[in-house]
Structures are given as structure tokens and as C-alpha cells.
Image: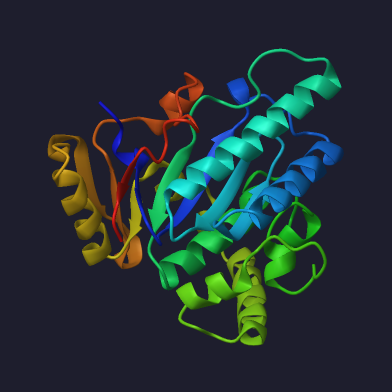
Length: 266
């Protein structure tokens, strides 16, 4: 039976996470992170997928994406990750899997929830203790979102602003820079890993999550879903009794070939 997080909605925003095989640090070298980003940029040019934010770490990637054709997202990931793995193994004289078999997709509500997810992605390497601020990690969207990177951009600014309520880009840059700085000045509670962004089917307000659950009910998966209230009015939907971390450790994340095989209309 397909897992609930394989179901996609046209026009929705998704936070995707994909780890290197066996959690190995296969992206530990800067030139390999550069190569991954370059390939992602090239594939985005011919795709209907819009990238809203990203972070490339030493052993996994975060991508925040949206597309009017949800199935295009799976196609993009299959192309980027398949081509990159093939190129990497050829250059290194390496054999075997580069990525864990399956990646995870969490649907994110627009507005404040999307805003918080942007920050969570950019603070990844701060949480890991690698850098004190996103500005110190070149392979993250912070540099584009704050106007520090203006050439070879990947992020679709128009698509992002539309999902945030149509604010002006200049206003967004200043607000986002201040938001990240304010978060870093707070105690460590907001700098810890938050499982809702990487282990849920959906994150948003109560109505948003209830609507997604209703769609999944139609597939007969009601008994396996859990809707839960978090802090600050945030709700999540996840698979009841499923330890996503254990699925990753066992190499059983969503495969690019399987994700997107079932699509809900928007």
C-alpha cells in the first residue's frame, strides 16, 4: 500500500528532504555541493517546478518547491538526483547507491507557515553547529533571499512572494534578514531540529491539515493518519506510528520513481 506522503496536490508547496545513502558524507567537499547546485539550476530551467528555498549540506539536501503540475516535482528530483549520482560515481570511480532510496515530502501551508519553513531550511547548518549564521554557509538560499547572491540564482522570487501574500521583494529581503537574526538571538529552543518540517505529511493551520486529511481519507488510509496540534496554532498531519527517522536509517525513503504516482487536484 502506498504511503500517504506520496500523494501530491497541484500548486502546493512541499519541503523535500533527501539523504545520502547510509547517511554518508558524500557531499562533504565544496566542489560536489557546487556541482549539485549547478545541476539543479540547469534542470530547473526546463522544469515547471519553482524553487522557493534550498540548503545543500554534507550528507543531505533540503528543497522547498512548488509546481502547478505536482508530478513534475518527482520528475525533477529523479533527473537531478539520478544525473548527479551517475556523475559523482563516474568521477570518483565509485559504485553503489548515492542517495537513500526514498525522500520525504511535507506539504507546507502558505503565509506564516511557509515563512517559518524558509527559516528552518536556512538555519540547518547552524543547528548542526557547522556555522554560526547562514551567511557563513554558501550553499543555502539565505544569500538569494537577502539579496546577497544576484547571479546564477535558483529561487523563483515571484512564486515565493505570491505565496507570502504578494509583499514587495525589497521589503521581504529586509524582513527576512531581521527574522533570521532575531531567531539566532533567542534561546536554543528555536534552533533545534523540528521534526514537523521533515517527518510530517503536512504542516499548517487546523483547516489546512483537516482538508489534506479529508483527501487522504478517500484513499482508505484514515486509520494510519494522526492530526496533531503543536505550539503557536500550528497543526501537523503524519502517519500514525511511523518513525520516519527509522525509515531513513533503514534506507526506505520515497524513491523518485514512486513519488507523485498519485496526485490530488488542487
